[in-house]
Image (tube, rainbow, N blue to C red; front, side):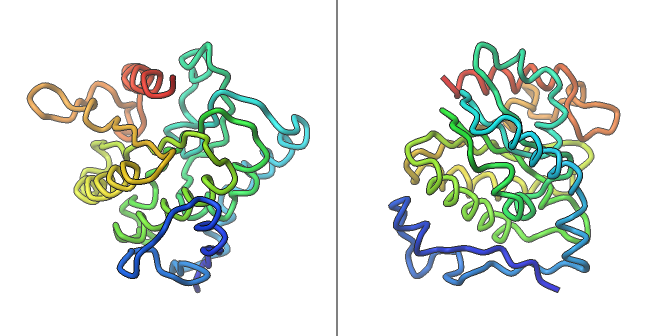
Length: 239
């Protein structure tokens, strides 16, 4: 089965002013096909979180904020994000296990209807070492599809794409993460209103070894020391 991510490319390009060449790696089609063993199960596995955000969106209406944080568990488990980002007002729409492909599916719930001054995206689970893992170029293309939607819906609002973080638990994915990070950085450097936040480099010690003291016992998610690193980098970027 295929999960079809709708890409209204002509609308996105005209709205954002971004031109794609014939050799661009975004496929010029109405969707980017992604194969899943069970597409329905994949996109509905975190439906409770999405349903909760639907209710919150109705209750709060359009929300003014200094920064809209979108992403997966690394954002969702940042328990002190509101205090760490103060005095910035933060709205968070994240859920553990999120991938960029199901965030596209849930885009209208998690990323539409806000009034942010900045938007931040962190997600790494498309390169998870699981049977549903995507190759690097497809992961990058999905990031760009998501970005084009953001630029269409929020023109002139700074959009920050955070580098995929290294971790001991996903050591086998590290080279793939580096490739995607380089592609995302180059993309941001050549796209107006898109910025790349490099958190990965700061997670290594002075000898070039990945720090192990900044992770929880699962060796995947950050502990307080890890979030202290992110806090300083994020606050410097989002001025």
